[in-house]
Structure formats: structure tokens, C-alpha cells
Length: 361
Image (cartoon, rainbow, N blue to C red):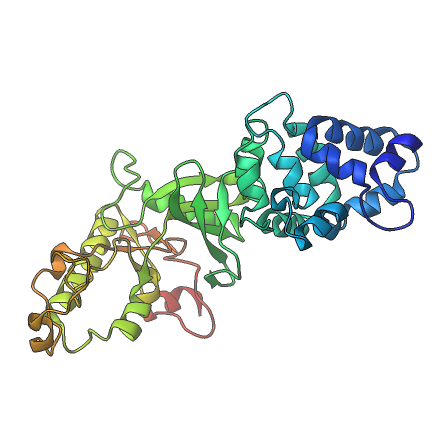
């Protein structure tokens, strides 16, 4: 074990030996075996573990290559060690980095935060570690799912696009279909169940109520609902597109879509319980109408028709956009004279609709 360690690591500084860099670029599979053996069987691996936990160590370059680069020689050899490993004989599986290296070394030694940062690191040619891993038959599957949620959803960086006391919503990309989705992660199971039941309440258990955003999938263990990603909420559209008071045709169209969705829910025997602009989303892209893209010449132009239409009202809006209801966790069965029910439990002391308040206050 000592000989392997001394072959790979500089004993005085936190860096790789020249032999390690050469091995990574020529025989990545042997390099991987050496590290796996060190981690699994060496009783004194604390120093090894500490070095491998540092993402900067993986990005170190061969010192000889750095000198050659300064002299304008052999720029292709100037690869960080992690890039060299994944780039090694990418078309020759027998020499390529094995999947076991990703599972037994990278995933065990690096935090997810550091690992994701490493996946984005670029070499001098602009190639990321992830892009190189995707060209390797052995590591392609790992590279696609690393850092994803449920091994399927590549979650957009940053805070939730929406968060409340009941849920958090994140935008993501389904790596299996390349479809843009929204992940709604619920805090409470009863509200999660209501989201599902509301969509299966129609006769025959129809899971696609007209006008209500359907579920693409749901994961009970995670209380996670997967839906098509809306392009914009009605609340955002009202405040940014400024169609209120000037585009009456569009306003009629949106009102018609919302009322049709409400009728669909009522016909299924349920109410929504929380209708508001934030819970209405556009699921089709709004048509771009300021510029023309049908002219030849390769340039966008602004038509005179747009300049003369000061109201912005459009006759084709009803065929252009699709608006649907979301957030059905407040949905509840409709009460009848024969059977009175608590309408919904999603209320607060800050506000409750009059028809709901009588049940709670």
C-alpha cells in the first residue's frame, strides 16, 4: 500500500506525482484500481482521504505540461488530472475509466456540492468534466444521473421558484425525456394526497381534468409531484405583460380558460379552494408578435401593424395560449344538503374566504 501511495502522491506537497499524471492520461483503469485499493484496504487512509476530499487536488495539472505550455509546446497534454482520467482513451473501453471509480472514489470522497462544482470545471479547450464523462461508455450513465433528484431530475440551481408553509416548487429537467418540469415537494401527506385525488375525481378516475395541470408522475416516498413546467403564472403575466385594460380579447380568453377549468372540477364533485392569479399558469409559450420572423434575409423586423396597434389587442390570442389551474392541495369535495363536509383545511388567520371561515372560526 505504501508503494502505491508514494507512486501517486507527492509526500511533501498536496499534489500528484509526475507518474500519477502520466498514468491518468495513458491507463486510467489502472489509476482507478490503485485509488480504489488504497481507499478500501489501506488501514492508514486518513491522509489519502483528506487529499481526495479537496476538489482542487483533482484539478491540478502536470508541472511538466505547465512548463511546456509556457514555452508554447504540447498544449494538448496540459489537462487537469480529473480531465485526463475521463479523457483517457475515450473510444477504447478497456483503457477507459471504470464506473467503479466514480462510485467508490468520487462519490465517497467528495461532497455533492464539491462534486457538482468539479463536474463544471473546464479544461483549456472548454470541455467540462461531465462532458468528458458522457463520452466514456463506462461512465456515461453515472455522468447523466450524478447530482440529480431521484436519479432522473436535474434541478435548476438556486432557491425554490415558490415556497410556502405547505410546499416548495423547483424547476428541473427530466434527463430521460429532456422535458422541462416542475417538482412540487409537499410537507404534509394529506395535502399531497388531495393533489392526486383531485385529479382522479372524475367519473372513471380520469387523471386529466380539463383545465387542471396534469401530473406527469408522483413519488409517494418523497411526497413529490411532477408536472409540466408552466412558462409564467397569471400573477406574473398581469404585472409584466400589462394587458389589463387594453387587450380585452386576451382577458376574455384567460377568463374563459379559468372558468372552464373550474367547471371541470365542479363537474367532478370538487372545488379548487384556492383560486388566485398565482395558481393559474400558462403552459404554452406566448406568441411573439412584436417582430416578424417570416421574412427572408435573416433579420427580425418590426411590422407597421404592431406600431399602429396601440392597445396591443390581438384577435388570435385565444388560439395562442393555454392557461391551467394548479395547486390542488386545498381541493375538497363539494358539500350537499344531504352530506355537509368541511370544505378545505387550507386557511389561515390572515385570510379565509367567507364560505370557508364558517367552518373554522
